[in-house]
Length: 403
Image (cartoon, rainbow, N blue to C red; front, side, top):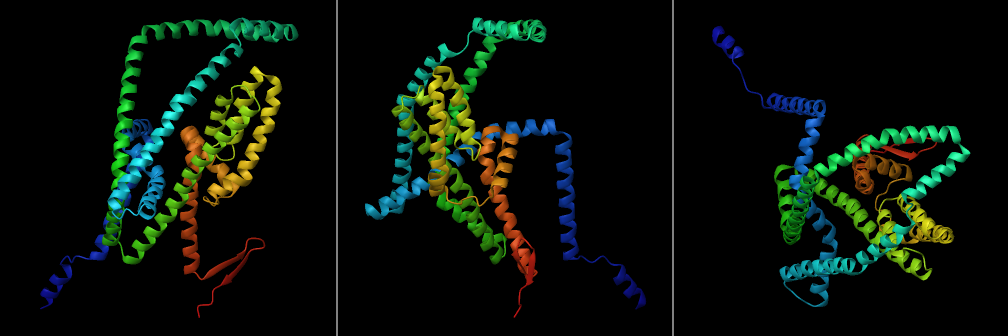
């Protein structure tokens, strides 16, 4: 009998709790090891990510295009359903997608037929004002009269070092001109094909958006507890409102600002009005720093063409940006991000470092989403501890009454 008891004690018994802990521990170790390997071999990791993004570009761009167009499609769909009394939702959806793309195609045609030719004309007008090599040399000679020793030695050494390098690079460029043209042609064709595929993917994404959302909800309720599934879906809706509201609102805001600039600059006979308006409209998509980024090149360009108009340009751009910051921006965007100015500047700086101008634009909604998620986690933890923060300065904390 005793031998039987000892045998039962030594027998291995499975334990579901410890097995789950072991699986989680193993997964954490594997993920950490994979992350460390990616960081150590960062060159290979960045190359792999770059190739992966290139392969997935049509799908990512198509999804982003569908994401941006979706509010317009929903508005047109509701218009056809309520105003024209078309009862079939599938027909309304199809008409919404069709007219959305027709509207975007019309905007592209207007840009190609009117904006692009005007930009070319403006650039041709700008060329005579760009300093020539002789003018630069004359300017350097005049500069040399005021700083004879330093300027002459500095530019002589710089030119002596730059000329051989310039000719070597020019020779290499001429030797590789045919492969470069071939590569550029292939890249252009590939880019056009990717754009066509992206448009097709966006159409299918918009058409099947309700099915995709439904399947995602089904998966959440299937694999998560009901409360967590509801919380996850609600959180994702809020994140979508923050991210999408900022992107779409900022695009609309920048288009309006560009149109206002073109209208006002044309009335004031501002030189190169189309070119300057396009620069201001595009850079306006970057929060806070966008107006300054757009105003500086615009001021320099107008200063070269007509110095008297440059001061007027600064005055007009100041008024337009004040109108945008105090009235138009809040009307369109509201408080979509919920970020304080310090965090907006941080997001722009971090995004610009990571991905250039595109990162400066997308960094703000991305940080806003992260801040929203962190705020939810903090509020949940404070609720669990029955703590209320009454005021930031001086700090006052009060325990909730459990009764």
